[in-house]
Image 1 (cartoon, rainbow, N blue to C red):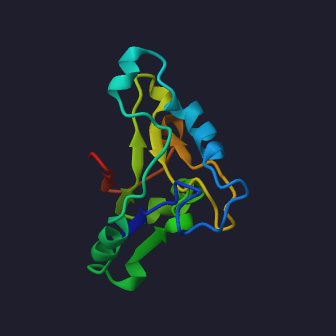
Image 2: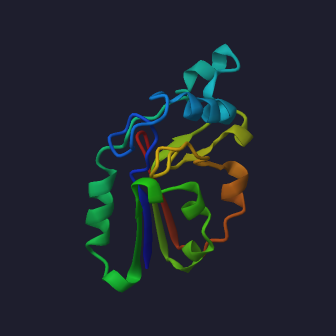
Length: 154
């Protein structure tokens, strides 16, 4: 019935990550720069940049409360490092009626620089591509009756 991806790891400084090699988020910042991280003009400053994202503290509780309403054999949950780009692109998501994504979104005047941000680090503290770009979203093969984006300002 329902698949939930929530509480991704956005920062090397997150307490869920092991100590990162250089203890900085420069790798993820570089990834996000290509995603619209740096304003291209003064008009872009109206939008909050996509350079760094705080943890969405209550999305774990949100996910757990939603899934408590559904029998175990009818739900899927991806939290933390599992709430990643690969999981968001997984064709198995097409079997769910409801898809609930609790993560940050990034909107830019250039649609190709807009999308959703999933875990930017893996369990070992290595940076990874966590950006679900507009073209990725467009190419998703979903049969869901409802897709929810729960983010910081939705």
